[in-house]
Length: 277
Image 1 (cartoon, helix red, strand yellow):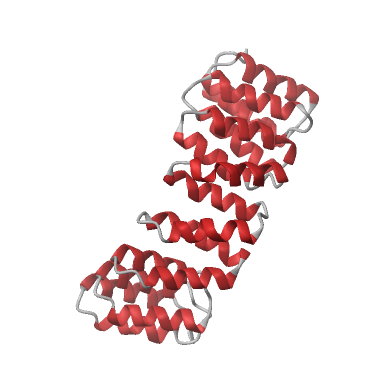
Image 2 (cartoon, helix red, strand yellow):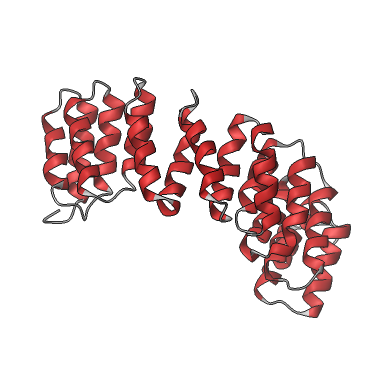
């Protein structure tokens, strides 16, 4: 009955994650090992509620049953939520062997939640071999897994100086928790670059730095930056600094901007700021 899916049957299997039981585990095993693609995906969802050594084996089985990657993605998400170090070996193998870029990216990100020395060693050893679009996920996981700062710092600085600057945003955000001083220094480097896209990303990063200096920098960008998208993003970032004194005053300067997009953004920001911000 579980080998061919109907929406109802697949939903029933997925819901087993909320009511784990020996009988439910057997149903999940059958769905993953013998079901069609929809049932395998549902079984992978149900892994989130399972305990014991079978979880890793079933995640591996789900990821290998079909080649479109959907079951593998869901199995990875379940392992991320479980956050058990014993699953690190399977995720590392999947990242190494898969040809699907999305599965590889999600696998790299999941590794950060499976904190152990094997994860840190794998990520450090493979970082420079990864395609550039995948490196942000690896670096974010290195931060989450507690890699030493002396190992993370040069990798992060290399990404920030890369022409593909958009890769740097998740790393800067992660570094705000890992090393705030380093993160703020990297944001300064981003803002000093001549490309508008760099300053746009720098404004995004400043939204996570809740200080008076951040507010002042964004206010300068609202007043002086030559790029309309950058000025709009600076205003958007200001809207996230509601507890910083002077945020409303800085946003109000955007109401006099020549570009209608900036004036519109300033009005929306002011509507969302609490009184006294």
